[in-house]
Length: 115
Length: 108
Image 1 (cartoon, chains in turn cyan, brown):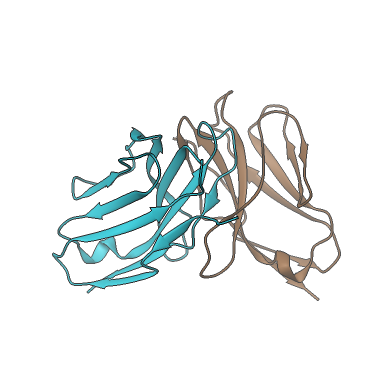
Image 2 (spheres, rainbow over the protein chains, first blue to last red; image 1 turned 90 degrees about the vertical axis):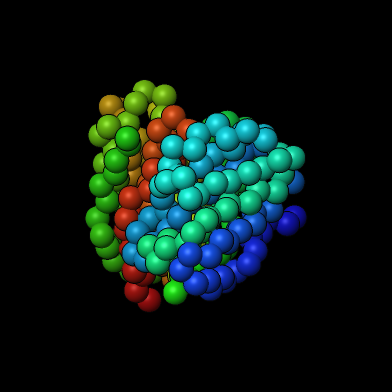
């Protein structure tokens, strides 16, 4: 079956611009996670959705970052007033059930470059 | 926050077993321990996870210490396709914590 997909695969934007990154989870997966990964580092937790609600957004670095999942399926990560330090690979993952109980399936990521 | 300590790199010969260690001394009693691996330019791939007991699946085995402060991922016969960065990831409440991982090199 189809795995987790993310679009776009690459995004180049200028400092100060607004960007949206999209994640399509595996059908039926209630849990959805966003991570940020810098070169040479492991993924860094940003936010966790259970259904439509953000169950834990404590990893969002500041108020420029926001994520939604209005129908409990597709999710969008939104970054306002981008900064060069936001450049990273943004990963999305989904799983059945509650956090940790089941395995996560990751998408290929979106590489964001802020110039 | 949960924290992990893993060797930066390890090397193995093809078709030999590999034991990848991880210390997670701050783990709580209800935190699952997951392992993922990642190839360059790809998202992480699930390997195995457990809570208290040792676990086996078609990819690997997971040995969890009795005090749960460490675990070991065991690849029974390493292949060239197992070369990747391996992350142990304790789940701290809702959050998966990933450290810097262990880069496994498999020699033919």
